[in-house]
Amino acid sequence: MGRGEQMRDRFRRGETTDDPFLLRLGGLALPAAIWLLGIVASYPGGPSQAPLGVRTALVLGLVVVDQTLPSARAPCWRRLLWLAAEILLSLLVVQAHGSVVRPALIYLLPASRALLLFGERPGLVLSLAVWLAYGVNVGLFLWPDRLGEFVSYFSFLLAPYIAAVVLTLATLRQAADRHRLQRLYDELHLAHTHLQALHQQAREAAVAEERNRLAREIHDSLAHYLTVISVQLEAAEKLGAEQVDRALEQVRRARRLTLECLQEVRRSVAALRASTLEELSWSNALEKLAAEFGDTTGLQVELRISAPEDIRLAPEIALALYRIAQEGLTNVHRHAHATRVLLAVTVSNGAVELVVQDDGHGPPAEPPSGQGGFGLLGLRERVELLGGRLGFGRAPSGGSRLEVVLPVQVAHDAVPV
Image 1 (cartoon, one colour):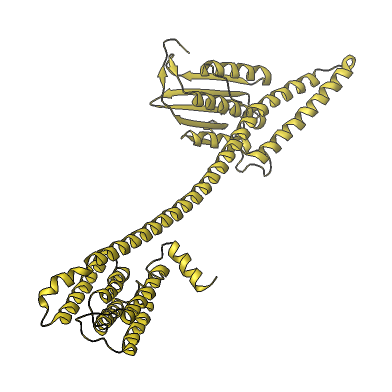
Image 2 (cartoon, rainbow, N blue to C red):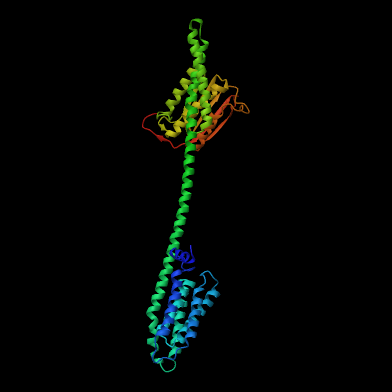
């Protein structure tokens, strides 16, 4: 791309104060027109024109100065010095032409350049200084015999001056608007990029949360029931006799498959780490859970519920209570070697407390590495998501104690739950 194409491209983008191609082109065309007027036009009654070589040299000097238009970011003293040089050359060009009418249009160059170099407000003040320089030029031209014609000569440049200033201001404002739109576009593009990144992070967080939820539900529901099935099959195997050898073989096979299924569940939980309980009365659900668990495992399950009869918990709190009780009872049967277990729920002071306590040998100081652990982790995650707290350790009586406290907003129904 040549320099001219680069200048045109920059002008189209609004960079008028750095390298405005069209305005620089005006700095060539206007002096050339004034130079031609000085050759072909006559000025009756005016002073004699300077020699053609002098006028040509002055016009060339003006062109050279005009084409070295400094950047609007150049030091202020440099821009002021450049503007003063162009005003002085404009005055000399008009004087050399022996007229103050048509050659006076040369003052449109420094008037527009002042706006380009110093911006809107300072540029307007300096362009007025150019207008005053033109007044000095008119006074010098008419001194001393024709001062009565000063007003008419001075007003000659008014309309072109206003047109030049208005067009230059329009160019500057258009360039500023383009810069502002480009800046807004860049900011919008950056904001869009950030939003896309946040959206991706939100999606990843949602996927991770859902995976963890699924892992908790798999462990708290499927693993619980598979454990119960395994206990029942083990009991049936112990009751077998010779006449039911084939049945016992099927029982052993079913128990083996059940254990394999439990291992597969644990592997799935380990890979996932993230069913909903249909809406029902949470107290009735806990009673049914305690009864069925006691019947299938042989454990004595004592259920204590201390809450107003018309209390109603939010669905997510009710589901959490059920799953925590389910997992707590399952862990007691798996690890505690207990005979009795207490399941207690208390609702008071804007909180619900659930306790699962057994009379077994209590938890080890450190769980064996690589065995289990997902149940307690899933419970802790479930409780933290609801803004509660979980504690697990040795009970005062020597067994294990699981304690969960959840903040709740309760409602009261017209009928007991």
